[in-house]
Image 1 (cartoon, one colour):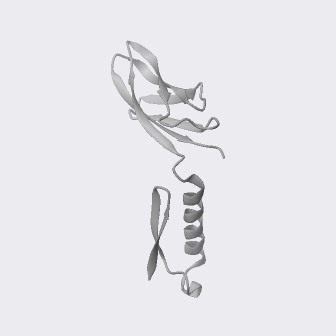
Image 2 (cartoon, one colour):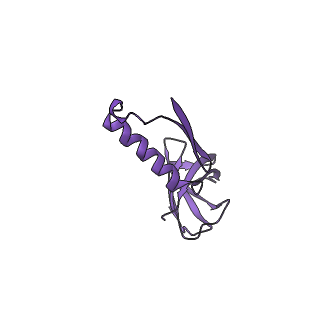
Image 3 (cartoon, one colour):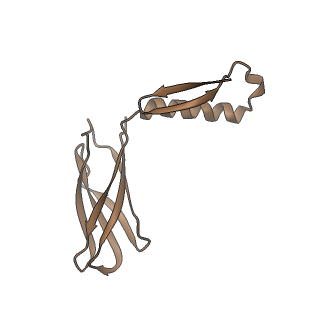
Length: 121
């Protein structure tokens, strides 16, 4: 037997835990951790992608504005899709940040980069 648990945009089907003796301890802990994280994170995590245009240089930047501003500056992670390109974040604020891409060699192409913003509290 199972039931559906929903919190914000997240939902999960979890087993009926009435007979806990049949459930291994690590599975119980995993279910607890998942439900706790769903409640904590809710829909405050934002993510997106950006096209970063290189104009014959090894570095390029793009300003990113969050779809919804945060009350405080979130933690932001960025990554580039290309294996010869890496991303970094600067000038982070509650409304956005600057995503910087660096390549091994100069380029005149456009590359996709991805970001994830997570509030601290």
